[in-house]
Length: 364
Image (cartoon, rainbow, N blue to C red; front, side):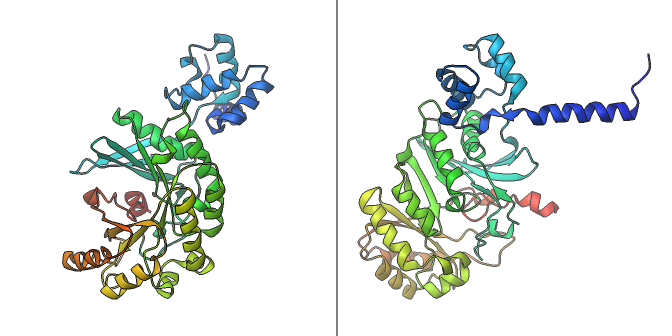
């Protein structure tokens, strides 16, 4: 018996690759398009619901596992489609129980998300992009080269994998990881659809928060969308000149218009939260606190103070506890509810602004 030549092996690999490439990833289909797909295959739409549920609730990675579907149709599906999602690469656990996940995409890129258990509340902070095109001056994620938008199934897959891996029902999802969700709006909305579907991950939209630096077009779309999600605005600087310098896209998204939409969102959908990252000697003075109170005085909202999470890639520092306390105490004079966030997962760089797939970046 002769061993196959290198030329024949290359040819075989090429054929197998082309066959695999012709198979579409069925995980990319949201429920409605999946129903349409089943119709083209001569199947009733309930087949789509069965497949969707197997993938998102029962974590199926092979059509053979879908035992309430006929074997003949399962074989037919496996010849036409694949079930491909993110691959878990590493998990780092902090002393407070927070966990940072590193995922690999099918095109060999990396993205991070964070699991934050807190009593009955189990939150996953998901990413919407690989890297971030916004490139805020103080954010480590912005130091990564922006690669691409994540697809809806890749965004939703983060919560699904964490839920399966921890054997814990995820109760809350925050779109606050790597990337700007409203610059990848349609895929973000698609992920919300998967997350909140009763045959998907079944996570309440009212327990879902979308964070943005203030992308006006995306905010308007979200305001008028049927989804009942919460909106968090990363304000960070009450002085618009400083804000424009530190958050480049703010120049094209005037603060006055951002605040106007925020007011409407609070009054018609859900109370908006303004996130304010406190950075030493930059926006942590009492005059900054006074300006912030004045800026938000007419807006029903919550204010969330976040002491800066330091990162080896960045030169910025966390203010002193005394400065943070003075700032917080002044904000208590505002009509809004004010909270001081206790950062989680600091020693594993899992806090806001720290997600940069650091050890992958470091290798490069």
